Image 1: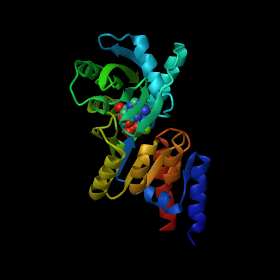
Image 2: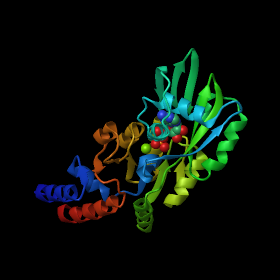
Image 3: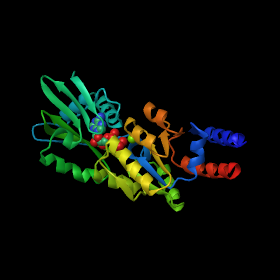
Image 4: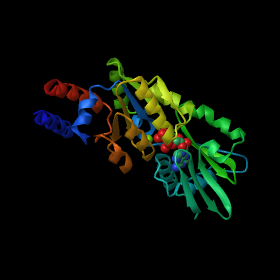
Length: 289
Ligand code: ADP
Ligand code: MG
């Protein structure tokens, strides 16, 4: 029987912080040809800092931060958490908004004194190209993510937030490429920010502006092209793609939905563990096959 070899390899991985839901998944890891990664919280630390606040005529920074934090008050998104942390540091008083609605991959809206307030992508707020949107491009090409703030359908300012690509990510990607595995980044963020983060991580192929269902479609396309495809992610929005991949990999600090959907969990948010797992899988397969 091959069971003892599989069980011992699964427990070997578990002791080193990589959990498997099945032996089959561990068996398949050695055959992966491409690995898709979510950006925020997967390639990056997912701990963002507000670096810039830019305002439209008639608004000041304090007001934009107050609106941003009030709109994001109920969101668990890493962008929301960063904005709320900054607002707390600056002792900003939150406004009592009502009718909160979060739209996955776009942003959050709420109401105050009969007006609509929004925080998120520019096109979530307005379809007009307002001047202030262009001001965000330079910051985006530095790898920053922009949260636009809307009042009654017009952009009244934005916050730029910076995230760091983990050092362990850079090492993991370089080693994957040495082994001829193809890394791909799938992100809901805009193309400017995506290009900068992909370059910092050492990834050539990236797809920006992905909604959760777009991530699924890209995983399907990768599966047509490559034999085994893993998807690594941390968010609720990654779960459908994790389920579609040959192997879904969740970051240990990720959302519950990602953890439940994944075949493999990296308890420490360190992508180098994927390499160790590939080696363990190959060794196990030599014994059982
Ligand atoms: P990713 O795939 O990079 O993890 P998401 O799908 O969670 O990103 O979000 C994609 C984009 O949608 C974000 O970069 C941001 O522009 C916007 N967005 C999503 N949720 C929020 C939110 N709560 N507040 C502001 N912007 C948001
Ligand atoms: Mg994420």
